[in-house]
Image 1 (tube, one colour):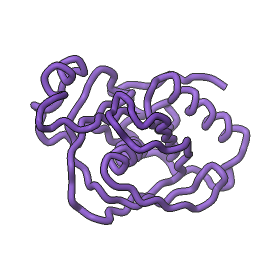
Image 2 (spheres, rainbow, N blue to C red):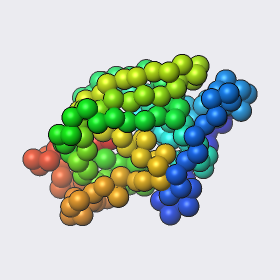
Image 3 (cartoon, rainbow, N blue to C red):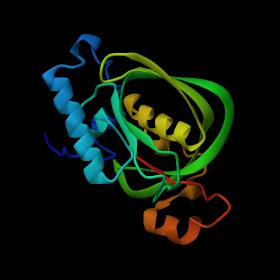
Length: 187
């Protein structure tokens, strides 16, 4: 198993719609190696989520893990490591809220993005079981951010006020303590 290179904005794979993952391949050696590599890459990068396109694999697979409730993202709910295959999002309530987001594929940058705050995610897990999860608040944002990668989108595509897009150091200096302060999402 290995830590893979995380590709950055500008790489064409990040702008492709990822192909659905073949259900009959879940559990194969290739699948297990990819998932373990993604887990190691996520841990090595210090992120909380990683989509397969970010390691130059254009397939609909993402991993999310939040192990510490108090992190650089603020105080957030923990989630055990999980694999999300061919996920779909249903908006349960269209009310939006905004959070500062970062991305492992846009290192050193932060942007304020508003997204729906109550969603349902239907997906296959790493054992090919059909699952569904309801998410609200910051976690809804994390999942939408990750699954955008599967659709060839980056968080910068969703920034509506470009004055709220900055280098991380300037975010820390000028935006962290203002009225828009919310946990930052980085994946």
